[in-house]
Image (cartoon, rainbow, N blue to C red):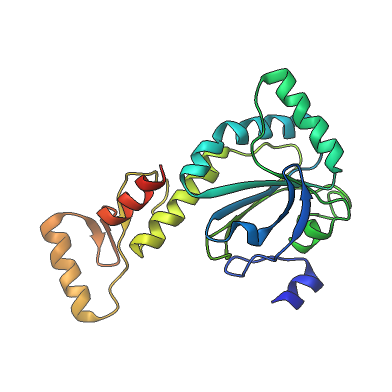
Length: 230
């Protein structure tokens, strides 16, 4: 896996996220510092730019929601640490909002290239708007990529983190347009007897469309696990 990432600069869902050590606005950090936490690692094209500024304000305002989901935000661009610091201070001065999460100064582009954050067809130096959701075991679970001129929808990133956590705990799936509190999809039967039992259950409880698509509420233990974080 490491060789593939080194050669292609591509991180895929299901792989372990590549380790890194970096200078950030919170001091030296490494990915392993957050072992046991979920991580949202996101890149931005540049400091003191309009779309990025609105995103950092939005991420900062949503930081508590991520913390409640045992999730650490980490920003990154190829700007210097002094540029990051000056930009974050400017945001604080102008809005009163303090950016609470670390922002990596990836001057060499080593981390950006390792994660495939630079799209050479767009820019050979700026990172596009990547988002990597990494679970508490260090595995990449979701990847979003946005163009330079389109800001991210932060509530969707929060929703996906919670959906992943709910699905993992219940060993289930979430349907289209799922939001927290709604029913989740039960795993489909794998034997004919289980299929017949599922059909009977659906006829009785009216909780599905067919044997391969039925719903249930999240288990109480999973709800408590999420509420404990909140």
